[in-house]
Length: 247
Image (cartoon, rainbow, N blue to C red):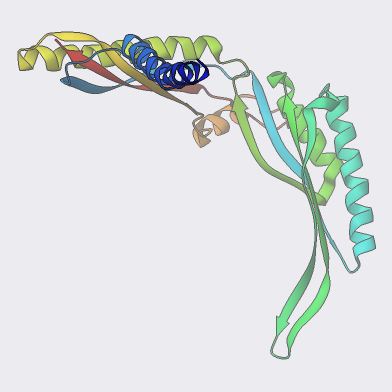
């Protein structure tokens, strides 16, 4: 009797994995869309433009002195004044972050070799300016605070929330891809089926500030000495790749 129970148990152990594998294959077949193997692969693109509502400044100070202590002290003093002006222009402390701090020896190269001439301290921050109307004042005040040590590396204009723009660009991209696929199907004498796979890629493009626009802005307000800034527009582009089944 015990031997019979042993063989029944062994058979059950062998059968259960087989049934499980069958169930797994059945589930996979139900969840995987069937294709005929005949497909059309197309790319679509959609772009929308919007006005930037935020600017990101990378700025700071760069100081060279004979000793590290002198360079660090002057850099610290100038950087403190610079940060104070940023906050005085209503830039929140959470929107100011240190990007780089470095100390390097500086050398002169002569026929006898290199000669140490001092040390350079670089300290830069990234500041988000949420009121673009104040951007000129922010730059001018920072320049005054930093004095001859000021360094302004870059200005980047952005749209803080691009959700709606992405949705519009995505819709345009899909329509563009569908139109291409439909044209290919009609030209080939086949019927376009449903999409099998869809993938997308989004990127942002901020065109450089045109020199003519800057000069014109400065000429229009000759009495004002503030730095002219032209944000321009930002383009949000979505590219999609869609594979359609051919019926």
